[in-house]
Image 1 (cartoon, rainbow, N blue to C red):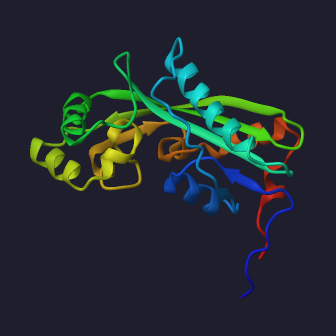
Image 2 (cartoon, rainbow, N blue to C red; image 1 turned 180 degrees about the vertical axis):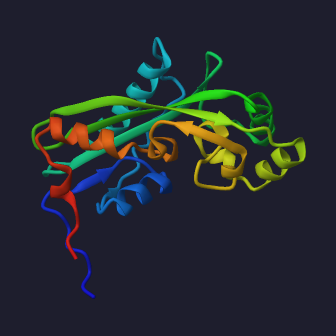
Length: 205
């Protein structure tokens, strides 16, 4: 079996998220990873959608500024909107426990800002994907056990759709990939806006 041959346009993921990388690889893409190093703490915006889009833009542009070829850079940022509050990664285990106790039996919207920058032209395309998440009602013991695994400390909203908290979610309305970290349908749309068919980036065995 021969190794996959890279596509003609290098795809760069401006994120350290293993879930986003896995989604792209499973979709036939072979992105390089360059972590942006953007300090998110001081970034503000007028609403949650604007915030995730601005953070995604900062990440994508920070990485694109390091390149000088024909790369396509993908930047993303995710947050959970719950009851008018915007939740990123929890500060610590106690915060994660508190989050889950508030989320039980509620619905929230997972927002992910997506920005694609074409290094060759300097053009970019951007949008936000939104998926409603319906949380179940795990017991205090189940919440404590989940937080003890460490998983919720590394993800927006303190939960994963494809990990240990999956049994605690009653369902979603919208794109599952967006909850995991990246909306592939939206990525296809943004690439098309830049004149790049997504299938042209597929690896070929």
